[in-house]
Image 1 (cartoon, helix red, strand yellow):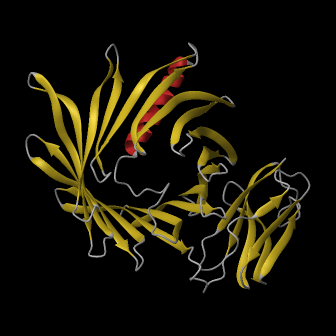
Image 2 (cartoon, rainbow, N blue to C red; image 1 turned 90 degrees about the horizontal axis):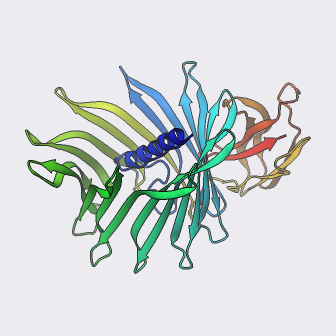
Image 3 (tube, rainbow, N blue to C red; image 1 turned 30 degrees about the vertical axis):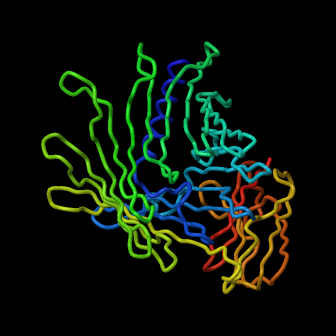
Length: 402
């Protein structure tokens, strides 16, 4: 069990390090004010662009992300639901818990959980990381944050040994800011056997005169000749247009033989409002820049001034949920709209259409009795309600039948 827990800690650590790469952040996309990312489709280039992943974003009535579902493109040319995240908020509107699920043969399993606590000032105080193991949650890591003048100053991470029932140092991150409260340096210390916390890596940040991030430099604490010193490893150079919108991130790696070398670049195509509607990733090779991935993003406006398209209430109500015999489903439409309310299983297959066609404005109520389109009882499990309106981001609600 101890080796398994240690392996799971390494998996989590690799995920944290991978998140530092300049991949488009699909968990919390940098949409402009009054806009929310509703869908992101990723394509991979292999003798032509091939669909790869599809992510749908669902929001609650406060505009907070509460469900992220991820689909993989199958050999049958269908989008199959593969994983999801649930976000739970406290009464102050802060993320209280995040639960990660994966789908295997139609079975929804929770495999990772993060629980947050906050101090009296509303700052994220502690994060507890759990891993699903044999139907139970096993505590793996505890993160403790400290702040100075309202800015995050330190994150100290402890690993938990369930056999010993004790915590030990795992990683420490220190943040340094300038007088304008811009992040200048992130120092990461990692546990090394018999040495405790030791210097591992750091990120140095520089800014343009307008305050936008110009460059991120990654350095590792390395043995050079007869001593340890900081060695350049990678840097990300950002380019912005005259409107201040990000248009390119160029990743360069450093070697002692050739110096800085272009390796990867991301180019951003922005709409009139500054939303990145397309992101292209290219890798550098001896033949020049080669297409690798691109993302097509769809955004929805939350502005009260943008009422040309009728939008449903972003939260579908289901009572009871979970249910046994039947559940009542309700939502609101601002105006009459062409819409569809359907039930999907965890394989992404539509099993029942509850409403379709032009729906009138106002409150909508439907009853689902747990049967499919052929009037057959469906087995107990988790299903997804999906409300779709042309030109709108779909609203997805998870319901459970027992």
